[in-house]
Length: 133
Image (cartoon, rainbow, N blue to C red; front, side, top):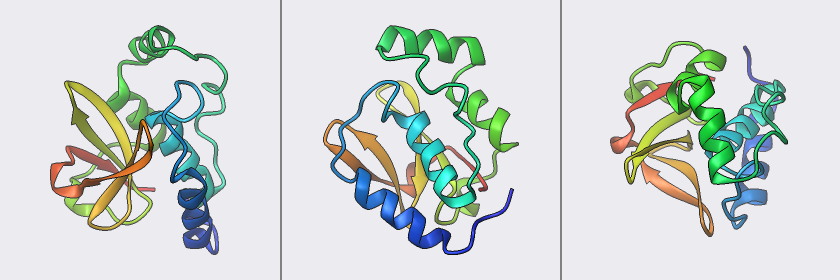
């Protein structure tokens, strides 16, 4: 997988577009946000088979159980994780919040995660794993 020319601009525009977009299962959740960022950066849509297949908490839980969870889903499409210390802008990052795993996208010293009111920064020091994009 390689990054497209001007990927930084494409990623920045995606962040601006999603900055205030609230969390929504099957449309703008952590897995699709990470996939959309990878799509903007590389042109590859790893979530093509997931889009439109779930829209509720229960449907998302069922889908994640079928694939082995958030960490396994990321590993299946992006390869083996690396230390979060190796993450750079655009890489996918794993966090745990309120007892559940979530994906975010590295933006330097923070990672951007989907929240109720849009994208929120999370400290990279709290990251558990990362996947190079």
